[in-house]
Image 1 (cartoon, rainbow over the protein chains, first blue to last red):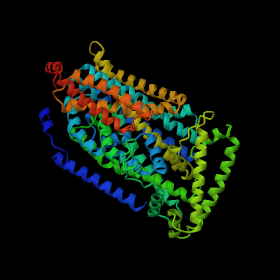
Image 2: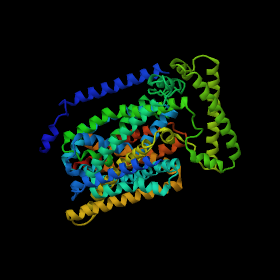
Image 3: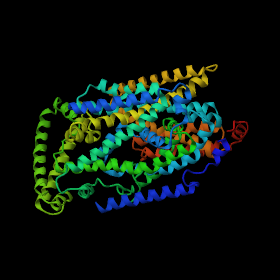
Image 4: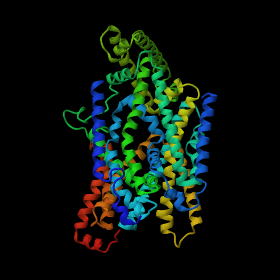
Length: 43
Length: 586
């Protein structure tokens, strides 16, 4: 793989980085919601 | 420790060393020694970056932190997943494309030699010292808890891993980290199972959460607005905002610019494998840290039904027993014992049924519950008195026993064999982190300094031998720093912890300018780095004196933003434009 090919290589699994941003932000929000539920429910 | 514990410990540690020697035996050149010939698959990159980040103290202090302060520490990692994407998009492809050995090598191609040398030097200074602490901290804990000789514990903690790290380089590090993480996770899962198993009949995980919640340990999400009258507490270390923003900058600088991490994902067989390992790290880190902290809450719930030690670090009580507080200590510990006996009896009476146990845990109704609350207040007062005595100048003790909580539970309550496994977990966690760092310290020394400044080229075989010698040198240096730590005490640990947060932001700023501000040249970024670094150090002094209320996580943000903004301003000046025009390009 030459240098230009490497630059053009897309994001792993989904091809586009936008999907990774969506996945990670969604995952973080999910974690925060679950943790917030645990914090409030058991306090 | 019993004989089975010693057998398990010896077999695990010698097995790791033998595996490391075996896997690294074919390494004979610099590419193999520092980059594992770029053959590592993504899941080993994942385990490598995780193993490098998680030191022994991570596994010792995190459960203790949840036990004392609650689980809010998990927020510290909220910025990490986003940082992983930025590292994958901007940092990793450039390092791979340029086929660099160290991250700082790239800075010379983008800026100039002085910027490369400055950042590499900051890394060597900060990492060399902090790795010494990584050896010292768990050694102190193990030696005082198990009565081991401190020198030998340090040599085992920081010295044995040198055998396979010097011999096999990055390949040995990568393969042993894989095995180490498997043992570590197995050990923690088994410890969690034992805690639940040893709770009274009918008391389960939901009850543990209720006990933790009602005692303020399940404070997983905090906003930073709780303490002050409506305003945000900038001095609060762990809350949602500092975790997402401060944690993002910290993770970005750590994974993007710290050679101990860059060296891990440069070993990947392709850019895709590097990225996949880093992205997966972003997804597993928060749940993993949550699980480790939850273990601390489980131990807390366990001690709700069992006698809790007045102080988890037994050696400090022995220190007090030989001080001027000897008689007072005997009086308060005897009172504490009586209170604990009464408390356990009260809780025991009410644990006949699951609901009664919950009632006692959560403080719902009954005279017994009111008495429990009184006992808890009296216990807290006794513990505070003991801490005050330990802080007394004539005693010179360590009043913080957070790091001893989990291991004390392990040694007191885990069955023979498992204690040895959990002690092995601590050693392996230390080894994984230290081995990767020694490899990266050696790579910076030879690539950024020796090879760069020594006149003439070197034969491949000589470079390889020299790399081994540098690894050995850094190993000995770190063990020596650990020994120095024992003499200087907590002040050095604190100083080195602050040192990291002082430099990380500025180094990140230099890299951000390199990647995103193409028009900025070497002179502007170098001057900005020096000026901002001075500013961050001044800010730290003001913060420590209480003149500026700012937690250390924010220093990373200040350092990074400071370098980017200042270099942009300097570059805009007439002299700056001319310099960039004649500067190097990547």
